[in-house]
Every structure is written in structure tokens, then in C-alpha cells.
Image 1 (cartoon, rainbow, N blue to C red):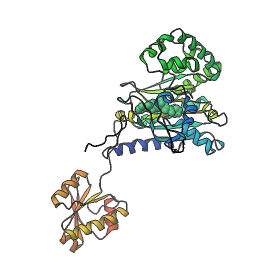
Image 2: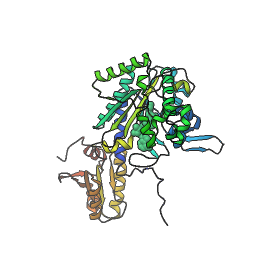
Image 3: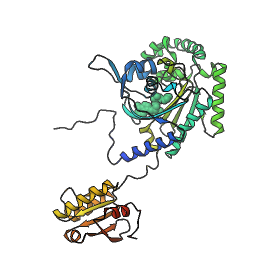
Image 4: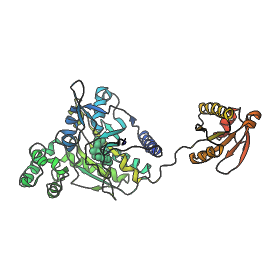
Length: 421
Ligand code: HAM
């Protein structure tokens, strides 16, 4: 019978690679902790309305890419296409915004978008995101952007370009939307069908359309930076000053608008110079918390696409290997190895033994494959004497150890005592 394959656009994590994920996540944990961000976890699916209201019903994500289904109770549910709306929902529902501000949260999630699968673009992918609520200061924007950069640096990632822009607030946006509407109306026949429908309701979305013809048209469209109000201009300039003062290099891109509706003022993307793909992106969203039922509260955040980071990480460290492989000859020794392994594991030692009833030669071959640091072979003689030879697989040195003294064996294997040196 043919095997069933994973759905298109999804990825498996194989046992030989899972330590790489743990590495990236542990770097995220350390980076987040260095600025006081606390981890949150939220459901994989939410009520669809959270995303139509939060992300925006004229965005590609909501119009084309959501995995939406009716549950058995007839409610419309959606697999999360991003984390920001859920993080706001969680904060509102649990009263977190009534506590000490700023509120700093981070998450490690899988997300789902029905996109066209290709290199670096998947239908299920992983994001690590950080969100900051309550701060309207431009230093909050600069700190958050610098934190995203620090995360990339802590992973050893180089060759990434930071692009920033300001897309203004609801006040300056109105004039800009009008200018866009009249520009695109003059080219209405050239627009794709989705963008024709966006023209009245949200012409800014046309700037983010992936259709080649619309990308060309967008190049000559009016720029938001020419329409910013004084407050937005001042904010943008203070963010740039703050970034420069800490040496976070950036390039301004007045065409950067982002694909989600909640953004206001600062938006940014970290671009992989080789592939031109965004590896991390985000921005300020001062209207989202109110839009989702909270009091007007500023917010800013970013999310990295973890799969896109992987090819840029120079060194993931190494996977853990067994502290010891206990080989055995015959059933009594196999039983003794089984018992010793259990006790050592209770002390936190990583132990492997034979479960395949193999010859001692085959067991040692397997031990070698696992990269075990030490090996010991138990036979009738070792059981009788209560002693075995402990071999250091790196330098070949060996010494005799008491196999009944689990405390001493643990200390040797954890490098706490060095009676073998
Ligand atoms: P986003 O730009 O839609 O923003 O996604 C963030 C990152 O996820 C992208 O920069 C990219 O690295 C990765 N990504 C997006 N789509 C795919 C895909 N199909 N396959 C692989 N990776 C992908 C957001 O999701 C916002 N929630 C970010 C944010 C947080 N803004 C404020 N706070």
C-alpha cells in the first residue's frame, strides 16, 4: 500500500534536526528574557472574527489564505494565520492590560496560510514573535526593532537588511487613501480582480498585492511619506534617531506597507539579502487593541519566520549524545545493564543499553553511531566482581569502576569526579 504523504507546504522535523529547533527556541527565550518579555501560549484555532477584525478583511491573508472551517457546533473557526491578534485577545480576555505597563509578551507558534508553496513559503510554518503594549514612545519602536536584530545576531545571522517606513495614523491615512484611490482609478483596467474590489474600501492593500501587474503599478503610486501628519513625521524621525544612536543600521523604503491592516506609524522588515525574503517583520499597531474591544492602547511587535532563519544560522551547536552506552553479554548482564541504566537515568545521566539482543560487536558499533561518551561492557565476570571497565570513547583511556556504586558512577559520568584520569 502506498504511504500517505504530509500535506503540500508542510514540513516534518526529523529526529536528527530537532535539536536545531531547541537551539533557536532557547536563543529566543534568552533574548526575550534579556528585555523582560514573558512567554504566552494560545490556541491553534480562534473564532474567525478575531482575524477578520484584527488582520483586516481586505488583506490577502483573510481573503485568500485562511484555513477556515465550521466546527461541529456550527461556529466559524480559523487556524491562526499569525499571532498578534491572538496575543491581543489573550491579553484582553485575561485582564493583562489592566496590570503593570508596558506589557511585554512573546510566543513560539505554528501558523497556517493557504499560500502557494515554494522555497521559504509554506502553508504551515513557525513564527517567534514579540509584542509590546502600552508604550507610545519612539524608544519603544526602536527598542523592539533592536530586540529583533539582537535575536538575529544571537543566532549568528548576518547578511540581513533592515528596511523601515512609516505608514502614518488614521488621520494622515485618509488623505493618502484618497490620493491612492484617484491614482489607481486611472489604471483600473490594469488591476487584478481582487484589487479592483479593494479600490474603494482599502486602496493601500493594492500596494501589497503579489500580482506582477499590480506590483508594476504600485511602483509609481503616491508615497505615504509625503502625506504624514506632523505627529507621525516627528515620531518617525525620533525612531530613526534612536535606531542610529544604538548603531542599528536601516534603510528607508517608502514602498513598505506590510500585508496586515492593523499597522500604524512604524513598519519594518528584515530582508535576507540572498533571497530577498523577509525573515522577520512587524510594526506599530496603535488601533488594534481598541478594534478588538479594549481601551485605546498602543502596541508594537514583530515575528520571525523560523524556517527562513534556518539557512542563515551558521552553527546550531550539537545534539546531546549518551553519557554512556552499557553493552552486555548474555541475559544476566542484560538484566544488570537494564537495572543500572534505570538508576543512572534517575540521576539525570543519559544512558543507552541493548534492546535488540545484538552481539557485543554490533552493540559497540551502535554505541559508536550514537556518539556515546563512555562505554562499559558487562559480562558474567563483571557481574561477579561488581566491577567493569569504563572506556572514554574520545581518547580511548579506560579505568575500572564499581558498577554497584551508582552515586560514584553518576559523578564520574557527569564529570564531577575524575577517578579515571
Ligand atoms: P508577517 O510579515 O505576515 O507578519 O509574517 C512574519 C514573518 O513570517 C515573515 O517575515 C516571514 O519571515 C514569515 N512568513 C510569512 N509567511 C510565510 C510563509 N508562507 N512561509 C514561511 N514563512 C513565512 C506577521 O505575521 C505579524 N503578526 C508580525 C507582527 C507581530 N507584527 C506585529 N507583531
